[in-house]
Length: 312
Image (cartoon, rainbow, N blue to C red):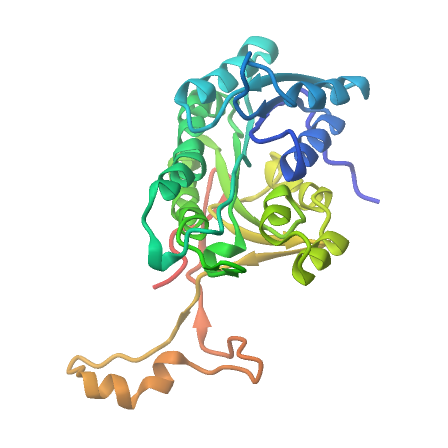
């Protein structure tokens, strides 16, 4: 039996925390002792369902406050950071979970205003919150950032076709997480990304009622994402700039790998054609990577293992 991971005396901001994965993370952080700023999307009157989550946390003896507002708005992101400082005196953890989905805009029909909306929430939003939280994470000495990516960033086809917005903006989070990790390393701040498999509201919207959606609902409860991701938010977590796939009780590191490939100073298009199998490298029968791929080793900085590059 290992010691329970606790967050006593630490403060966290969780965006999009009114349902699904965000709610599950906020509840588990509070259960483990964290003081939580619960963010909900903008509503008239400045309040929304985040107050229900706050009440649920307080009803269980936890500590939480709510901040209503869209992460697409810089003022809302600053209000979240300010709420942590005003109510808890510190900010140690930010979880960039807020998101919406779109599966109707096909890649052959893009761009459109839809991708601007998706960019504002999924890319601009996490950057704005990171900027607002930066001085407080730095003061913490062990700031933790968890960004919510998506396996769809590697390519996904919905019932409407191959998408031209959500998958694309989610792919930007790989680079963003690496940049956050690099900037934070000398201050003890880590940033990691998770690629969750869960029956969230977005999955329900996109695939509800389909065979795939029904399978997701049976096997991928959002609470399992919170359980898997919690260690990435803890000060003991030793890595930064990394990506993790998780869902249904499984968790695995994801890397961008490079084959040994070929080297020829007199390279020609014909050489590429002739040595194509070497460039592609070996594959197993199920198309999994065989031998011959590698990742450059990590370096240690302030106790965090931070891989300088993920491919050559």
